[in-house]
Length: 313
Ligand code: SIN
Figure (cartoon, helix red, strand yellow):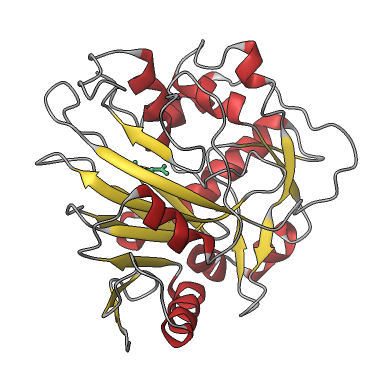
């Protein structure tokens, strides 16, 4: 199979044509896809009608898969390697407006990197569109690699050896109190991550500052959070963002080591959106695990940053 790779923006993201990734791939095609992933950070494959098993098999070629954490949105029937990001319940009915499960999933509408709150953060995520709303529900991407390259050299030097604390309890707390009962919170204690990550293949650097990042080791909290917000804003300037408008059968995969992403709202009271995600585990820890990580509670400006991105119904 020969694939064709077409850029979707001048700086990152590409569409890959010519491969049926729902079936086992020959090594040449696989190697070309792997190289395109390192180069473009976001890959779109159209017209892939995936079963969960086929999505898991394709994802596994990139490495071992993460299992999902237990949450108020979990479903017994979902395979452990699939994150079911949908507004539909186990009986295939729309989840009612305002239900905590939808509020919980709305946390994905803040700019983030998947699983940066785990000691071993995610390498890649693969999201397949099973059902989509007629409008809204896009996914947006922004490159922390591109933004790092645009920073002044003295800022790049300042960030180089910094370590950030990431916490899922902190970031879901920006959405709503009570989304993380204590037994769920116990699964995800805060962790340390390098603030700048280097791609092992092409040596390109990216800062690493999604919504779960809430402290920088050695900096006062308010100063650290202001810097984290400033870096996210630098990466997510509108002209640097790729907005993916989904079609059923799309699979988009992205590099969590260097990409921010967020889902966009849609009319959840009327329309179904069913997306299945597989998540490839990465390399880590990315920072020395010297002492237990800790974070201060969110302040008004932190909550304002998170809430500004959400549209809760
Ligand atoms: C995600 O945050 O992994 C999913 C984003 C989306 O639902 O568009």
